[in-house]
Length: 373
Image (cartoon, rainbow, N blue to C red):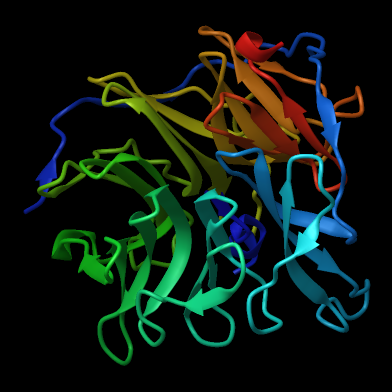
């Protein structure tokens, strides 16, 4: 599951959990020296920049790339492509129809890849190893933000649904091998926007994003998360980030009592720096949501989470060089990137064999699990 749209997002029966919402953030101690790990570099696709990277189950990767453009006309002469790499083979261009960027990719194998595009029709495509087949939740009304394939005939997508000519509402779509079914979230959640999802099973799904208060105050957007238990959606009572707004871009759930949300603090002046406590992080321990921000006033946002060897990692974007952080159980420690130094940006993802992958938008690398070293 990979969201190309994190960068794009920056630019552009209900039951409520009756649990205490702790708003205070854990104090961020000065960061120790960054940790160095044994990254193994992966050949870069023949393009200027990898915008998203998705590891699949059979030593297969997909990568969405961007080439061209310029400082004065970014959209001019830009080429977006989707690539696939199997084992030691070279990257192969498998771009779906159209020139638009792929906003979300997911899949389970080299012959089971999904790609969703939203710029020229709300399109979804499936790759069977040879050719693409158009297969969208709804080409006119469902905008896909994130996706996750559990198997060939069990695929989930989170996004927005066009309920009326002027109203888009949060919704989740499911593919069962025969067709797509779209379910709108309950009315009490209609002001939410979904940016990301975590799918462990058909009865254990988290979605996250933000809720619009409908005001023009600095806290107009508040963090939002909800859980699907197979029967109903439950909105979590997240702590308010007032007087600032919060947009969530990352969610990962290891268990019902171990859920992490990541994003940023934001205000009407467009300030998304971590001037408060750093990269915005919330953790659910089964009874309380607690702020455990990645420290650093130079951090812009937390973009991704992934587990590796039983430990949580966070991909972050910063103004300096802090692309990845690792949770020790009591604090965050920064980790050097694939080139042996801290990376400015880090997009993290994990594969079924336990490997961790990092895309810092200039290098791709793999960190093998202890069991495979």
